[in-house]
Length: 144
Image (cartoon, rainbow, N blue to C red; front, top):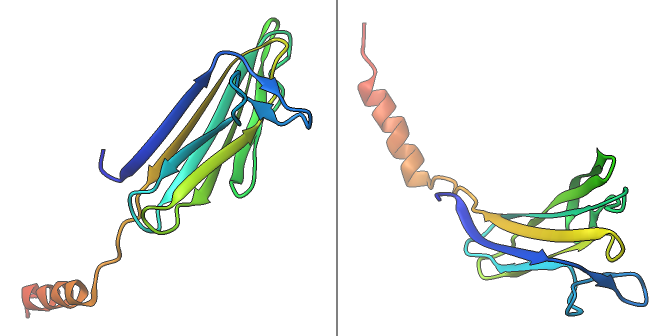
């Protein structure tokens, strides 16, 4: 898809937490995504979504250096979910970018999903392109 660089998606069927209550996957890994950017000045969008029962999903969030865009919890009765979205600068092409998240784990939390998508920067036109566009406009202009 034009404008989209690298992506990473992960699915955790259950999760635990370490002694400091940092969320970990069942294998003990942090709840995160990791990509290597493919272009300079790209923007990385990271998100986490979880679901559980009996209001157990909580309200997830993103961890620095990810800038939080939105987070919340929704549902009713026995089915609840939470989501958080954030962005971070992709840096120079070839940069390793990790998006880490905080979310409830264990108990009635059933699934946790994470996703990171790199959106490529649109390069600014060079001076030669701008001059050519200007000349084309002048030459194409009719005199009355």
